[in-house]
Structures are given as structure tokens and as C-alpha cells.
Length: 68
Image (cartoon, rainbow, N blue to C red):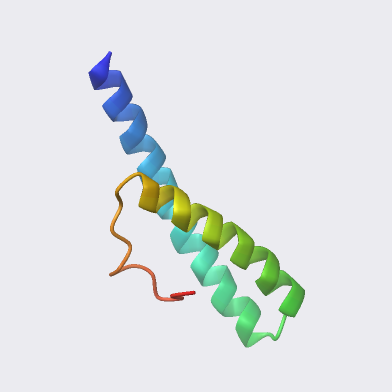
């Protein structure tokens, strides 16, 4: 059971990191385009995903280039 749980955690982390990267990219585009509402919406998702990844022990220091 632990192997399956570890694999599931690994899959969750992998998906979370992909989503985190994509959200940051979209945030940069929204900021560049001055899309204030879009940026604010993405920021909520960004903060939620950042909290989830941190709670799973993922170190985001090197990949978090938004840093909000």
C-alpha cells in the first residue's frame, strides 16, 4: 500500500509542478498585457498550488520566479 501511496504522491507533485510552471507563465503574460482581473484570478490559483506543494515538502525556491 505504501508503494502505491508514494507513486500517487509523486504523480500529484509532478502534476502540481507542471501546473505551477504554467500558471506562472500565464501570470507573466497577463501582467505584460495589463490584464488585471486575469492576473488576480491566476494569482489565487498560484497561491493555492504553492501552498499545496509546500505542504507536500516541495522546495519551490528555484522554480518560483513570481515570488508573491
